[in-house]
Image 1: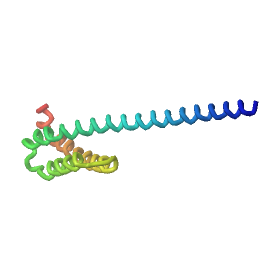
Image 2: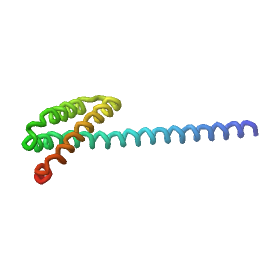
Image 3: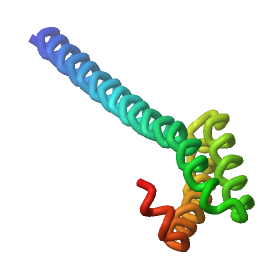
Image 4: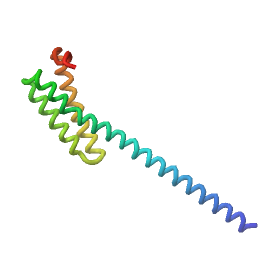
Length: 114
């Protein structure tokens, strides 16, 4: 009888450990999948930036410093490797893009060329 109780406890423990392990694997896969989606969107945004810079160049030739900041931030974001580096360069890129959007507000003709 004692042997049966011990075997039952061991089986229950094994099932519990297996369930916990599967849950952890599921969460890790979910996190990897979420990061892949974020990476796709960041790459898509990085691919759209050269078109934005070309559009703004014609209207704001004297705003070269802003455009250079956007290009440098984009190049840094593309070259970033790792989550922390990508987050840091994405913050820099977001700041540079805010300057471009401020240019769009300053030049109404730029908004009309959509």
